[in-house]
Length: 402
Ligand SMILES: Cc1cc2nc3c(=O)[nH]c(=O)nc-3n(C[C@H](O)[C@H](O)[C@H](O)COP(=O)(O)OP(=O)(O)OC[C@H]3O[C@@H](n4cnc5c(N)ncnc54)[C@H](O)[C@@H]3O)c2cc1C
Image (cartoon, rainbow, N blue to C red; front, side, top):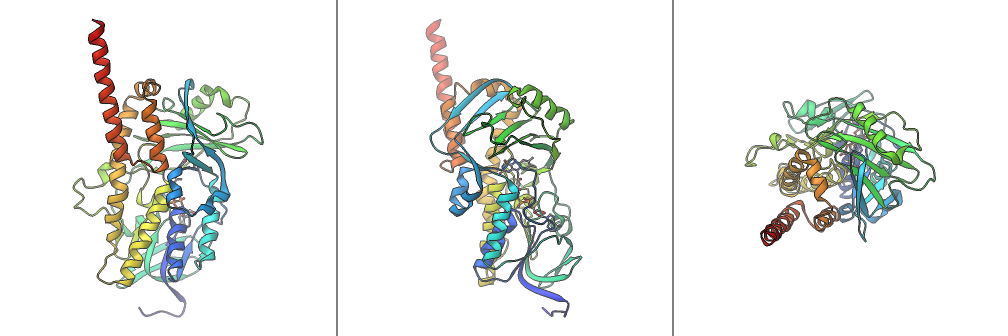
């Protein structure tokens, strides 16, 4: 492509250096590509997020990220509108808690160390497809790249400009960070809290960090009518929070995977690739519809995108669209099952909550999903068979009592 004197050219340009962008940039730089990573913020920057990494992240991140882990979670305390807590601990980690400013900064610095040129405080203002690449404009310059990665989060400008008409399903959430100093952890060392009755179709959480608690509410099915009221009610119901003054919560959209935005037969394009541009992480709506987990999928989609880009650059017979196939196989199949589970849990939250003590085995199995030892798909099959056989036992019990 002809290069104008005031234009800098790269093999790849990544817009947004959160977990999705920083991962893609690292992988491409390591493979020897020239990579520019743009971020509108300066890292370390605050990001509204619970910062809960499911332990399966160990399967896809090098171990050095543990240097920014603030708390290790072994079990969950479930409650329903602040009452009747039920907890189940386990012997190995199910999640790691991070503060996103430190975690994301760690990933950005890693990308920089392997060769990514990072420009912070430089938002992309526009981008357009050219016959053989992409042009990106910021207030500071113009750039050309053979491939563009849209990793600019829930309000992605790349998606708006290069994927017009893309349907999105963005849920409302509110979160606050309570500085607790060295006080003992609430709800208990090694434990996170999940309240599935706090919002009409979602949950509230307390995720412990080193000297902070991240607390929040999110509605995973249809958007909260009055999130602040629900947040305040959760804080009132949760008596363990009484000692602390709660800073005002901050809102952020959560772009959940939606069954309706993806063709059932998978034949239609799932719109993660357009010309020379790919979407990853929140920009691609890769957020688990059961509990709103997005960091794992941001990292993983960044890795899958990088693999497809490298394959395509090395072999012209390959296509960037291979990335869509990889996401479909590895992530969408999982999200479809998670969406089915969400539909059950958030339609009947009280019933599900009351059944938890009876089905501890299923909760443990879910912990294995978080550890990556089970997938949602294998979990679903096993859990169904446990429930089926326990109904049989119940029926037999009832018959014998007559
Ligand atoms: C309240 C809340 C709680 C959550 N809790 C959890 C949790 O506990 N666990 C979990 O796994 N997930 C959680 N999530 C989801 C998680 O935060 C996201 O899925 C994750 O941040 C996605 O990473 P990303 O890299 O795609 O996007 P982001 O982390 O949003 O990063 C996008 C980056 O792009 C930059 N950017 C944006 N626009 C531009 C532009 N025009 N030019 C240049 N740069 C730009 C931003 O500055 C940012 O650095 C939560 C989300 C919310 C809202």
